[in-house]
Image 1 (tube, rainbow, N blue to C red):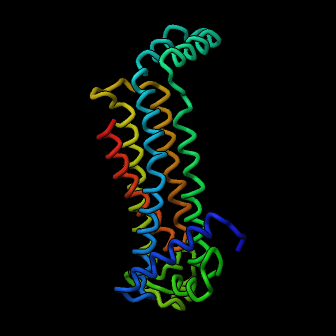
Image 2: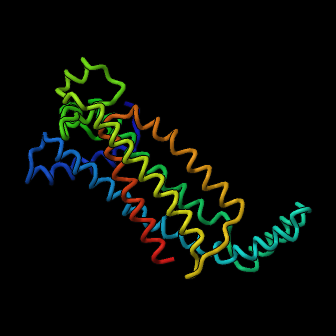
Image 3: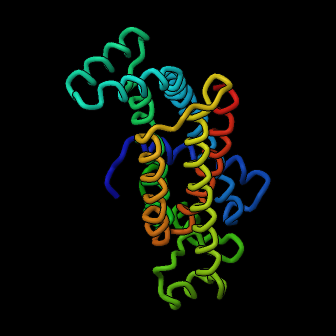
Length: 256
């Protein structure tokens, strides 16, 4: 595996979590590994929560001046140069950075993707990122409701049988992916609602916000297709991450 320092740190943390859970459960059990993955996902989200709150604070400040921005766009829509000047002047007067929410969001990507890189390799039985060969194989061969964490719907029936997967393993994987997709749609809708609900009042959705929400919704099916080819361990990570994102969006709406 290609060395990845952040994934190595993430791997060390996952192994420590697994060791703690193994004190009360079978170390080779799929339940133990799944709980370890979910716990790691929760920890990663918890560590990036300050960045999420920072991005949310910027989004709230932008939302508060959204009516003024919409008015500027309406008034100067025929003069792009003047529109940009007036918009930037408005941002400066209100001390709002339109890109303030981007940096905290971008910074989260390496942390969350490190979990993805780690689990992808480990679920295929590859040593590395803090995992020994025996630990990686233990994760890959463990099963949850009869589905090995290394299983994917792209595997042949012979490969699934070699992993001692149940006959309906692929159906279970597809159901898990559909659950992940449903949670993605909920996240998009909650983000849209949170954008429009500012300061205890509903804002009128502008054309830009409608296009952005539609683009996210159109992108979800492509994410689903990508998930279908992933090992089951990563699908568990995606479902857990999306569920935490739903809870996170609800929390952000409450404090906005």
